[in-house]
Amino acid sequence: MRRRKNKKPPIETWAEMRSVMRDCFVHSYHRREMHQDVQLLRQGTKSVEDYYQAMEKLMIRADPKEEHDTTIARFLHDLNREIRNVVEIHPYADLYDLVAMVTKVDKQQCSNVGRRFMAPQNAPRPGVPSTSTFNLYDLAPYLEDNSDLRSNPSR
Image 1 (cartoon, one colour):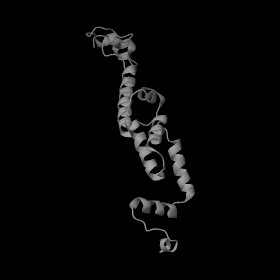
Image 2 (cartoon, rainbow, N blue to C red):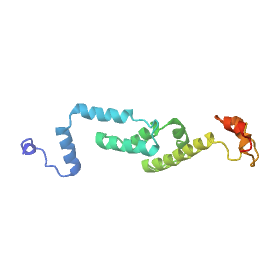
Image 3 (spheres, rainbow, N blue to C red):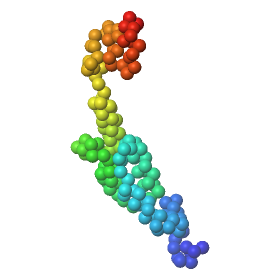
Image 4 (tube, rainbow, N blue to C red):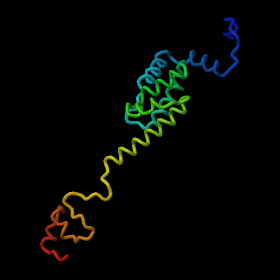
């Protein structure tokens, strides 16, 4: 009724209905907070998948009117530097290609970090005999409670 009184055309699409409902019922401060949340979102310690899902949810809720390229730039800028540096040099067509590539790089880096901190399987450990056949008495000096082994070495 009010639209007719104000001589506005009737609502024809769901997008238009959503926009009108948002304008009527969502307070401006809430809208500003949602936009601020989008601006402050960073990957941090999240995996790329978690970061992208969080960004998608915020973008749906905030409904920013921005170009597709701006969204790609926002996603790329807020990634961790190590991942961003690798991905920036590769071509991508759209946001979905970028997310797929970033996810691969993230998984690669996670597996490399895990390998970097693991000792090689066949590397000798300092202080432990390197032969595969040794008895428990050889390890006695390295055990915390070894009083019973020293008293009875034949064990």
